[in-house]
Image (tube, rainbow, N blue to C red; front, side, top):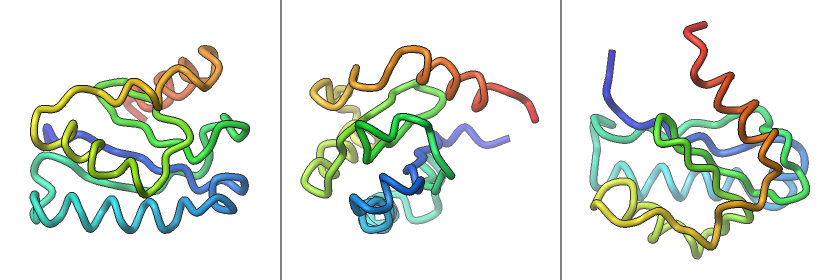
Length: 112
């Protein structure tokens, strides 16, 4: 099993309308430029987190970081955190309801 962090970008309807596809593609490209083999970070799409009112939502597992209202301008700072030992991006956290975040972590922690 890989020790790579998994970064999920929501592709639910609201997030998609806000440009989550572009955020996903840009983030994936930025990460691959530093980690071409995805040994440390893998960027993937996720069907929907359920925090539609505060999308675009991005999660980092197993770190349990739930980012909301993510735009392309935020991506360099996210990459800094993911691959260069930076701090979590606090201004993008704490916007989704806590029960939504807990549901997401329960799903991602599941062995299935």
